[in-house]
Structure formats: C-alpha cells, structure tokens
Length: 121
Image (cartoon, rainbow, N blue to C red; front, side, top):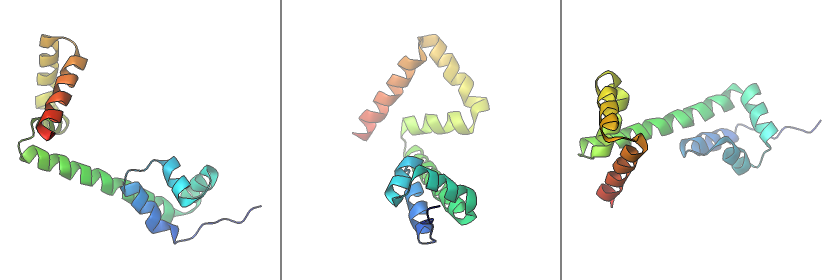
C-alpha cells in the first residue's frame, strides 16, 4: 500500500483553493494528489473536510456580500436577483407574471443579462 501524502500543511491550501471557487478536480490537481487520495482525505480527516467546507462557505459569503453591495449601489440586476431569492413570496410571482406577459423566460433572462453587462461596462 502506498504511503499517504496527507499532511496538515495541506489545510490552508485546501481552504484557500475552495475559497477561490476551485472545483474538487482543480483542488486535487493543485495539491498534486489523486482524485482517490482527495476523497480519502475528506472521508478520513475531519480537519481536511472542515477546511474544504469553510473555504466554500466563505466564498459564498463573499459573493453574497458583493451582490448585496451591488444592489445597494443601485444595480438593477443585483436588486432583482436579491429580492427574488430572499423574498420569494413577494417577488417570484411578479417575475413569473412579467415572463408570462412577455413570453419566453429565456428572453427575459437575456434582457436582464444585457442590462447587467451594459451597467457594468
């Protein structure tokens, strides 16, 4: 049986890679370990698993904060996205009605994406 490369030195790397949004494959390749070793470390080492979860959780929090700041700053697309997801009882029905009134939901999404691109550019 091959000796495990597991080391606590991997922990800050795992957390950092996860925080940057890397996928599992990108993380184990960046660490220089196999897919099998990566999932073995997750299964056998709670500290490894916890660092992976923390990094991912932190990246979600950072993205939520960035979206919130865009919304506060008047970015229409961010405001709509935030409200539809955070207050669905009041906002999803409005979105459905607008989509039904104007046709295809893909068309609506394309319009929102275009508005976002124009306001960021």
